[in-house]
Length: 491
Image 1 (cartoon, one colour):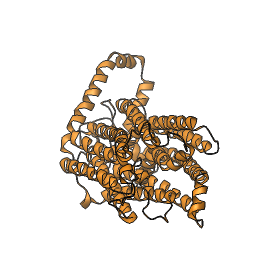
Image 2: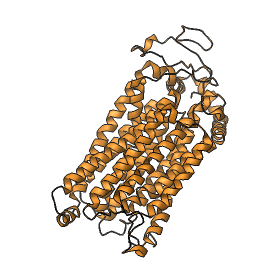
Image 3: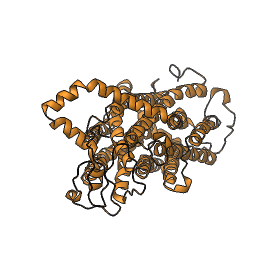
């Protein structure tokens, strides 16, 4: 939100918005225009009958896809990365290293992006970050055609992931701020988009895996897959489509910015940057002289909102602590109990099942009867997901102490069902937390302050990434329990 007390806020038009931005009246604070325009101060609540039209919802779905597209492509291409690390001691813990490097970088830069979210135009952030991300995914596409030393490749992938995570942090803060101003409907569309892209990417991976193993004996398939050819082909498709989609995302957001509804709801965020760049020297001197106080006020504002929403923040964080502690670092090590099912195909299907469950969990949040707004209930649901960790350890994991013994969960169908519920609970609980935390209508902790909406959304998003970091670190401990060894030194 803008720090300027002269910022204008308008209700989102109920009917399809006009194509001409000039149709929005230009008023001063406190003036009265026609009945379709509402002027609010920064502490006012949003109108209860706000309607987000289909175009805005779909654009937020696309933006949600862009936020998690790099991460999903990276983890779904794990088979390709592992094929390049064959016979390397780094292969065993590569997934945990990748998760930690990506999420830790995202967490660190997200902290910076959260504090500076009001100091730059969100539309400019989206444009710059999406184009830079498309360049990084293009580099990954090239890497599928160039054989490299395992150690060099390991460093390249982690470095590329770190840069993607850093850029993604700024992209994420810009998008979640805009979505929170449009309300829970836009936030739900954003969360659904994050899961939808994972379904699409893992679906492509399944088709690639099927094409790789179709019509071949198990022995010949094992020989063929060990060369890494199908993994390289599949990964090049992932990375190439990712590059194109990020460019499309930049164009879609550009379209959103031109809409009158965007100018009415989020225009003050853009105007703030213009004022800073075009203000006179007296204004600039004033800004410089009070910069320290403004910074302290802003940090105090963030801490106040974070303290008020602490239950939501713990809940959404712990959701991803549980998820990243086992997925994909541990779940990719679970082998099929049916000897006729090839591990490559089984791994591809396992990604698809989780992502479909995650998408369904986020999608059902669009039905009002299935929404839970209570912070305490969401925290209980988040904590209850801990039960999934020992359940996965009961599946067909190859552990030294269980060699020759049948696993407790001795069915591929049951394993996939558990994985589906795991993904669905991940999407459902995390989406409800992200929808509830910045909602003026359903979160009494915000006390009706409109200026707290974007801060609540960005802090909740920051805690979500914090959960990813902790979960990635926990995956090393779970890996140690699986291999009954030191995962950093033993294969």
